[in-house]
Amino acid sequence: MFTGIIEEIGKVKSVVKSAKSAKITVQAKKVLEDVKLGDSIATNGVCLTVTSFTKSEFTVDVMAETMRKSNLDLLSDGSPVNLERALRLGDRLGGHMVSGHVDGLGTIEGTLKEENAIWVTIGADASILRYVIPKGSIAIDGISLTVAYVDDTCFKVSVIPHTKDETTLLGKNIGAKVNLECDLVGKYIEKLVLGKTNESHEDRKSIDLDFLTRNGFA
Image 1 (cartoon, rainbow, N blue to C red):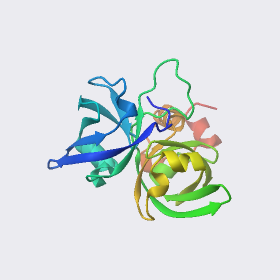
Image 2: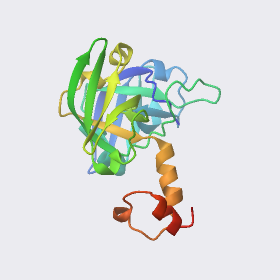
Image 3: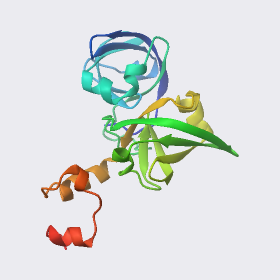
């Protein structure tokens, strides 16, 4: 489990790809201070397991499903990546609860400066936007951010100078792909409520009073 508060920006040293999976080595410093084999490090918001490490780098294996769902497939030697160690019991939770299990990809559609902050517009599929709500939390490349606006095709976040300086987000170009992880709470509620029906995912358009009555919740 993570918080979405990025600890440092690492640099990809090498990406060795197989047919569908990969082995990635990342140069870092802070996240290696107390690392052990088997530890989890969120890399661009993806929970990955450390398989080997030195004082200046760590290596992870990335399975085919992770490559399909995330932008790790787009990494190359020298790519910057957001890094965060797993949350420890007793740590302050400065962001929100982030699992490191990416829901899918979004696309940076635009940026707009407003005084000391920068608005970032992210386009995403309906399957992701269904869980995005105004003033809710979302992880973008592992960064915990607050949703300021959402419609049927995109959502917007406002990035403060600290986040700009400490993460990779504003260094990306328009059209770049970013990893998105929606807030856990909405997904669990949907599963608990809609999981009790025989309706297909496509038929689950909304939860209203009629739906709750038909399924014994009202």
